Length: 168
Picture 1 (tube, helix red, strand yellow):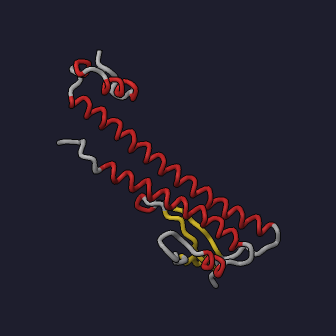
Picture 2 (cartoon, one colour):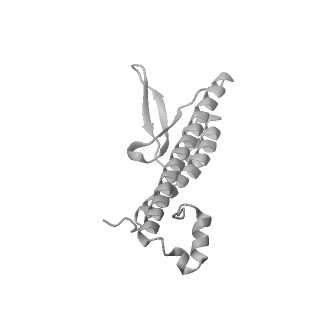
Picture 3 (tube, one colour):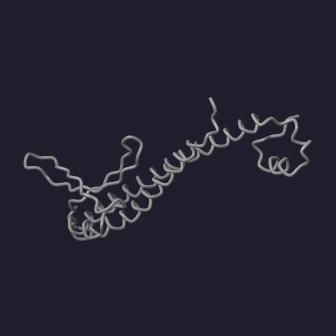
């Protein structure tokens, strides 16, 4: 019976065992097991990226819930809006100015980020009305962390794909 090369303890034991205990295992079988493990890691990284997207969407939802709560307390709804999307597979969490048009509806204009990391507190507060600014700053703190997390996950996926374990 062949050893389970997807069981970490079995692999450790085989690694430290006498060389004769490894004779029945070919390098090809070991490479195939490694490939399977790497494919599983990639699938888990994809899942982690989706969880990151879900978390950032929840913070966006909380931002809009907070704005509605401010309105319920008699505060102006404000002009800042936030949205999260994944165009081309990359997470984008942004703020925009939302202003009423003369003929009805709203015009939306993205705020420019102050850096690669995101929006500066002064930018959000400058465009916000009253407590809306504090809500935007708190939301952006989460966005910064999650943007970085998403970038690291995608970077790790790219590095994983460069491993030369998949010969033709």
